[in-house]
Image (cartoon, rainbow, N blue to C red):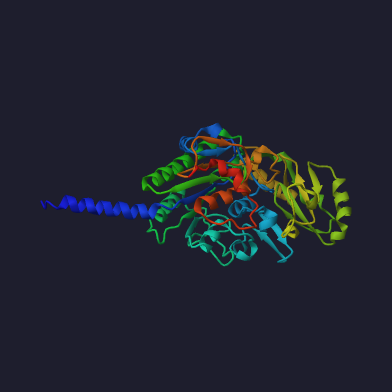
Length: 417
């Protein structure tokens, strides 16, 4: 045996450690969305890996969504630090007078069109500042916003299994420093899917799905630890879930009969775009005289909207808001479609969202863990606009002036340097 071999090996190891240290000195952030994960699921079901993640990090009592508590507006609020009326994705479905077109989340050509999206998403901000980013799904990441996409991204495909997404993140994190993304987003739909199908009170179905998701997240957590890199993981959800009985569905076709307006229904609320906006008071009075578990409101007078600029016209002239536990459907015929689905699942209940954030059932989650995050720290509920400046602080990115979030809200969870 060559007597110099041990010395050579020690030198090579030292060089590897030095290079590795140089590559990993900068912080990374993985922003994970667990769609529809209600604020109380961890306490109710005690998933092992998430509980450990929380105990070694920081957690909020709940995460308060922006209004409406729908998937697309809230994901994009988290991504931009701006409320829906500021960034333009004001609901899952809405009419845009500025484009004379109706946006819906199943219209792929519009979802991937960057001109619909205002603000500066985190991945765009990273790229603008010379930092690579990656996304295994997140609202807006498929579109060229400000003509910029993440360095690495995928068009949404709900059939891609969770472990495939996890393994790709490992691959990204093991890239050389010069091409490695430091801002990464991930998305998992499991709890939203099961919550809609069976409602948020079906412990058997929820627990079964969460148990599997927790194992997959555990694989992510352990894999990140094994890489020995400076990685902070932030887990959020866009909204909670409310149980709705089949009997509490409100058909809009009869309610709006004779009303001269375009209607875009989003379930917990419907947007009305009047043919003649001067008729607003008259239409509001007409609808208010009708009985039902709903109210008709002028968006300009809603406390959810501090200012309707610049996208207030996308919200509409009037809104119909279903009472909590009730839900709007386009037609009476559609009620049978819902009933058929529920009979197949042997349940009278489904889960829905979109209601006012004043209802705690709409609240989601915020958990954070990593080298820059304090351990075993609990904080009060907060609005989801404040996540953006926290991530900017961790990554050393400037916060755009348009951002409505305030770093002071989440600064206490950061370790002091």
